[in-house]
Amino acid sequence: MKIVDLTHLIKEGMPVFPGTEPPVLEVANTLEKDGFREKKLHMYSHTGTHMDAPAHMIAQGWTLDQVPASAFFGPAAKLDARGLQRIEKHHLESLIKPETEFLILWTGWDQFWGSESYFGAFPTLSPEAAKWLSGLPLKGVGVDAISIDPMDSVNFEVHLELLGSDKVLIENLKGLDQLPEHFLFSAMPLKLEDADGSPVRAFALVDHDLSTNC
Image (cartoon, rainbow, N blue to C red; front, side):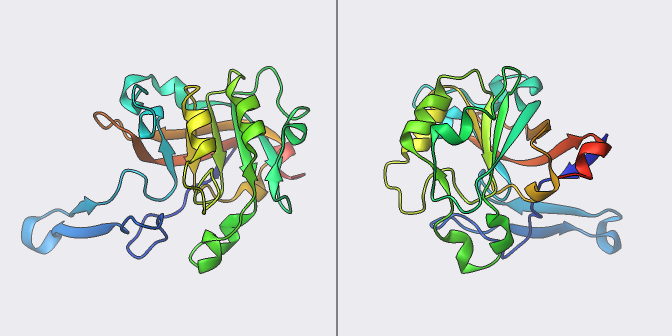
């Protein structure tokens, strides 16, 4: 199996959702002074490649620390959504198999990481497609864009539909062009108390033969 890293580097000055602040990675200890290196991290729980728990927007939703690590790993299907404006139910129906636990939306938007275009009009799920997905036994939905909702959304309809059906959301993925249509997916959050969200180290496990053909 080949491991494909799907995670953006967390660093100062990186893109963050408008209205939040980029991380500050403060030097706390040095080899010269203390004999060891350590940093103090100041950042929002939804920084970089990260996961939204249902508690992010659902009043009685569960937090990431309340579920086992198995909730963040499983078979995934990738939809090539490049060139689409809205992702509809008919784009998804033949893709998702009975064993599929994660849907990953490949918009191609990670190519704009670090530029203003990253906050532009990336493909998003239609409310109807989100509602259909909410009725499936998926663990989560991921995307290589800043949000699962359009940037101009004020009611976060897709977030609420999916989080309200006990699914996690993974945003700011990268490198989805390296993946075949079906693969094993993992996005492990930090085990923070009362976690509405967390940065993750997301990766895919891909059969070597399949990865050469994607």
